[in-house]
Image 1 (tube, rainbow, N blue to C red):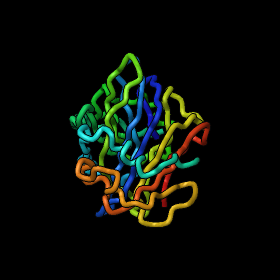
Image 2 (cartoon, one colour; image 1 turned 90 degrees about the vertical axis):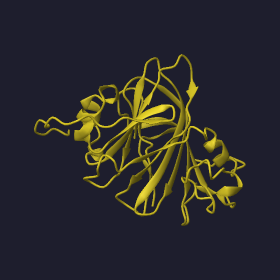
Image 3 (cartoon, one colour; image 1 turned 90 degrees about the horizontal axis):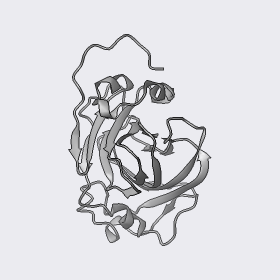
Image 4 (cartoon, rainbow, N blue to C red; image 1 turned 30 degrees about the vertical axis):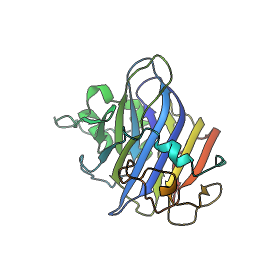
Length: 244
């Protein structure tokens, strides 16, 4: 899910995922957006239950704004295709971290949204609309309002995943405060996966080091592995995407 705390128009979403050692996953997210006021973007993460608030590591890719353009160079053509409970005890606010052009926080569970900086909070009704995410964690990024469409540098982090044999892409999206069963997709997904991928995933034959600046990617891209891509465009079921 990619959910926003206020009205926003989003286009050209690009997401990169790669499995890391010790049961972790890297996730990089970029897009163009337009919002009249500051909004928060919330990404659910299939973290193990009981994950600590410092178990997600944010990565500053402000020095590599063209990462996805480089990932795309390997492909001459685009690929086809209620948490109600007892009143919480008073707790400290979650840490807000500065990551390049963004402020970001990690929310270990839905109950911890009350510990989030008030600027980043979701309406409780939106949290309750997604029981699937009842034991997920959430990465939250603050986006500044803009008068026109704005491209932002990639938002990146690594997180512990509950299923070490799967890659997760948060492709459910809520841009108007309502969870629709179908949504308009404008997504290009990228991953590095050492196993065979089903059609319509398309894997380039070259290792990533031939078209990606691996040093500026700060360890998120494996230069020795090829990159696979999948395009999601048009009206599609509003679901998250997995590679297993």
